[in-house]
Structures are given as C-alpha cells and as structure tokens.
Length: 321
Length: 253
Image (tube, rainbow over all chains, first blue to last red; front, side):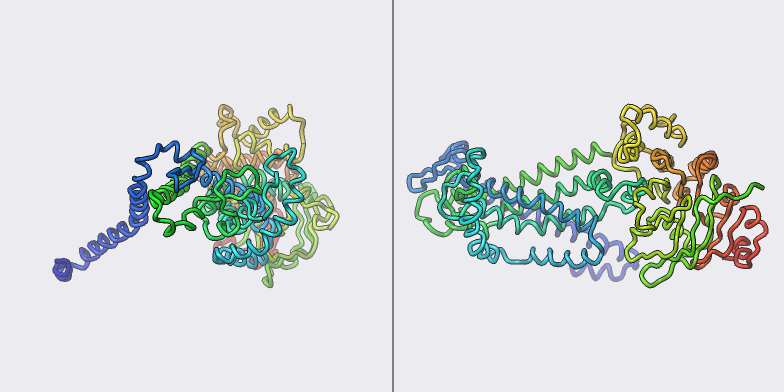
C-alpha cells in the first residue's frame, strides 16, 4: 500500500512531491519525539501496576511514613530509604552548589579564553568517568578520610549541631555518599551554569563596566540576575542526577535501613535498596511489589522535582518580562 | 573662531588584536565641549579608537595598546591610574542599548550607588534630574519601578544616556548610538547630544555622513587604521584636503 502511494507520487509534479515528503518527514519527527514521553508514561504505568499488590494491602501513609522495614514480617516502611535519599542528595548539593556556581562564574567571567578552553574539556571528562569508578574511589579514599579525619574533627561541634554527632565507627556514611555524589554532579552543574552565563550578552557587561563598575559588581548586579533562572535550572538538573545515582552511592553509604540523624550515620537510599535486592529474596511475599513501589516513589520524586522547578522557573520568568 | 582647547589627546597610539594592527600611530586631539565625530569606512578602526578612550580595548582577548591617551593631560594607560576611575569619566552609548536587569529607577541610580556619589536621600532627586536631561522623564515618571526591559528600544537608549550621565562624567562616548533606532528615536538622541555639548565633550563614531554634517563640530576621518584627516567639521566635510577624504565624502567607498 505504502509502496503504491510512493509510485503514484512519482508521476505527480515535483512540487506536490516535495510537499508530501515534507509532510511525511514532519510526521516521522513527531512520532520520534513522542517516543520518550510515551516510554516514561509506560514505565510509570508498569511500575504502578506491579506495585498494586502492596498498594492494595498496605495503607499508603504506612508505606511512605512507616519506619519499620521488616519484609519477613510483612512490614514495609519506606521512610528510611526516602530520608536516606534526601539526606545524601542534600549533603551532595550543599557541598557541590557553592563550589560549582563559583567555578562557573570564574570560568565565564574572569578566566582568559585560553584557560576556558583548557578547563572545559577536563570538566566534561569528569562527567564521563563511570559511576563504579567513583564508587571504588569513594571506598578507597573518601570513606577512610571521613572515618579518620573529618568525623573526629567535626564531631567536636556536635553539642551545637546535633547533625555532626558521630555514632558510626566506620566511614560508610551519608557524608561519604554526599562527597562522592558532589564530585559526580559537579561537571553537570558547572557545564550548564557556564553555558547559561555565556548566553548573557557581552554588551550587558560592557554597559556596567562602562559606568566604572568593577568586575565583581558587574557580575553581581548585571550578569547573575540575568542568569539566575538558568543557574537554578542547572542545580535542579544536578539534583535529579544525585537522586537517581545508584552504584557509587551504594558502595559508600553503608546501606543500613535507618532514618539518619547525623551526617556520619549510615543510610540506605532508594536506588541502593532496589539495586541491592532486586532478584534476590524474591521468595518473601510482596517483596517484589515493595521494590517496584520503591522505584515508583523514586521516579515520582525525580519527576516531581523537575515539574516543580519547571513551574517555578516559568513563574519567575513571567514576573521578569 | 575660538582656539581649540583639547580635552582628550592621543599620542602615537597603536592598537593590535593578536598580530593584526588595528590602529597605526594615531595622534589626535579632541576638543572640549564640542561634538567630535570619527568617520570612515567599516573596518577602519573607528570603534577601536573609541574603545581606547575608556580602556574598553582591554576587554578584548589578545588586544594590546601602545602609546598614550591623555585625558586632561593625564595618561589613562599609566599603571597608577585605576581603570574604574577612567571609565567613570566617560559615559558610553553603545550601538544598541543594554538596560541592566533592574528597574528604570535602579538603572539610573546604579552608577551613583556603586560609586557612592550621593547620600541616599538625594538619589531620588538625582534620578529624576538625569531622566529629564535625557528627555525620558515625562514618559516614565509613572512607572519608575517597572523593569527597564519594558521600554521601547529608543527609550532604552535614552535610559542608557541618563544612566551614563548619572556618574557625572565629563565625556560622552557614542559608538553609532543611533544605528539600531528608528528615525524618530534617532533624532531624539541627536537632539539631546547637541544640548549636552555645552557641558560635556562628546565623541561619536558614525558611518553616516549626513549625521556628521548635522552634528559634528570636529571631524576625524580614518582609513585602514590611520587618521587621514582631522579638523573643523565644516572644513573637512566641504573642502577636504586629502584625496582619500575627498573620495569618501563624495561617496566612492
């Protein structure tokens, strides 16, 4: 059928053939660009269906806010894992964001063109290192460092800041996970924040400099306000990557299903839970469904963060115009 | 005619971008309280010369300057001079206006605030004053705290003028400041500049000969990085001495 159509169009005028081809290409592109969206929806639906057994037998509040994780007894509280994910991500962002934003500002506003051309590819290279390599590095370098140096140093302040209390004799902790994650998301945040800063027109900087402003005043009052929404977007992107990062984190956070109270506590983020247990212990009833709903929760967290930030950006942009 | 009193003077000024020479041995004077226009075909170094006058040339990668630029007899390239002070002495009108990402009011107040030129309670009055001088006050007085990006491009250029005047410069530099504007807005800017020459030395780059005839008191004609002819506008534009100037003015290139 399709073939005959094509043959028929061959004897038509070149103009209408061009128009037809144009139409077909447009449809093909429309289809292809729809695939990711459909895929995401399918995954969401599949996860939802697969978690039905547990969603139907356990109240949702118990699942989300229950802190007991005893699969053998049929108790599935995800709070330790959800809070583990949030803790590790927050620690990573607290470490990465200031450093990354300042790096991007330095590269874009202060560094010479030569330095920019040298450093940018190096940062991109950092993004290409496999996750498991970061994990090994975390185990060999970061975990002992946290255990031997950072924890003794910072826990002195625990009487003021309870989150610095040292409760864990090892270095496998939220902090170790956060440090490794911070290094992993840094190239993304820096690269995007840098691109955003580069889109600010050069004439705007000149306008400020021409008034006798210093470089820092120019950055602070002219460049950053213009780039703020884009930099915010780069942080959100880093955040979504951090939420989902699995391998490197599970190698260094300790994987203890508890709600962390201190950055030196071990944690058990959602991705680690899924990766560690899927395919094992499947004889326990509902375990399979529990892991599926863990995936569902993780997916919803990431999607929710992205949708929220999209709406927030739109709101800010509308006020600016 | 009264004797020319120089406000800006360049001595053997050379500028390079990498290995290409953009200015060759430029020695000119720019008279006080007059409109000086730098004219010439594109690529002749007009804008580069202008950029040398507020050290904007240093923002270009690989740019290098030799020679001297004296403003009131002081070399602005001397290591003892602070670049922010040099730039504060001259207001800049770029080819297209770039309002800062803040309100109309804050745009004008910006320079006064970063240089702490006035006590806080005087800023409001000063903003009003400079907006009036730039001929924008009547159009914006009811929306001073609206974002400056809401203004039309012609209004934005006048806002940039007000913003530049607010740091109390002695010089106004303009790099084809009307080229992106519609004819009416362009006239508006031109009118302001003619009014302002009483108090400021004005240096404009232009490739529009008619504009030079309308505005210029003093003309500098450049070609291939060199100054070919400089002098009183009427003389240069109606009776050029040099053959290249003659060719340019008769429209040959």
